[in-house]
Image (cartoon, rainbow, N blue to C red; front, side, top):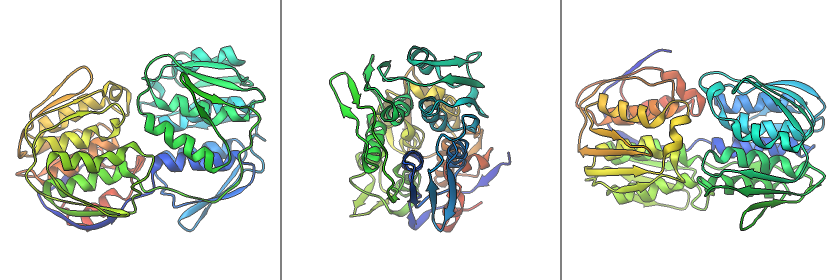
Length: 417
């Protein structure tokens, strides 16, 4: 991958938030499972969404572009009883489709690239064989499954990845029998589960929260509906933070009542001291004096890299905790975040579950290893705005995983390369 060199600058103006990748994943899948024809819009074709579209097609459904969205025809869903599912580098795609393919009785082989073959799937290897699904793997990908998923009780830890729970929630309504998802550890990233349940309900399917997890009635049917996706608070966080450290940026297309947990970014930037204005569908953030805060990241792990950037420009010591799951993302994201900021003259220390950032109010500049991690590259690009000299970042193309338009918007707002 190629590198990019960015120069100190200010970002000013308005940018529209891209469609929420998390919401698009879920809506496309629910539409396909409806067995009818649905329009999902807007959709941004990031690499992760391309992976999900490919897996929907592997199940036999049709997906066609339509203006700013996609038309999903699920008439022939599960018509392919043997298929290969290429999940690219998308952990969501992999963990969502394993139980879905099993629910449809598909003999499936799952493959992936980047770090995905090494990322954990052991929760399914423990729980699915007890429910009628044979799993063949040497520990990661490729993974082959066969058999048909049966309803019942699924004991799932809540502190590894909410994606396993979402995969089961999407699949279990399709089964004949009722099911229970029983949490064996406290739940983290609950907002992502809330997004799943809300999306399912839009398509006519329900999962009931219980004291122990969720009850899912079998024999339900997804209904075909047209669906408008949320703006992405996770991606908006980069430009909002850019405003906080170097400029005046308004991000539009954001729902204040969104189920996305990362909507908390506006509150957190305000706690740092940034001047923030929340409108009906926008957030405006202006540069001002920043001061350190303590952050519990259990429900907002994706925000940690960009929050660490903000903390580096704040006075005092910021502590981020509850983020141990970041070690099994596209990179060991606690390590790569610390390495990124330290390479730019910051003072960041890793802990077992987070980071300690000694803010100095400024960074010097330097060379950053993007680690083929989209969130590291975008965070480093925001950090470059307030550095004393240029910043060179490797793996610039990794932003295509989630936000292909990132650098176009960055330069339009005044970024310099």
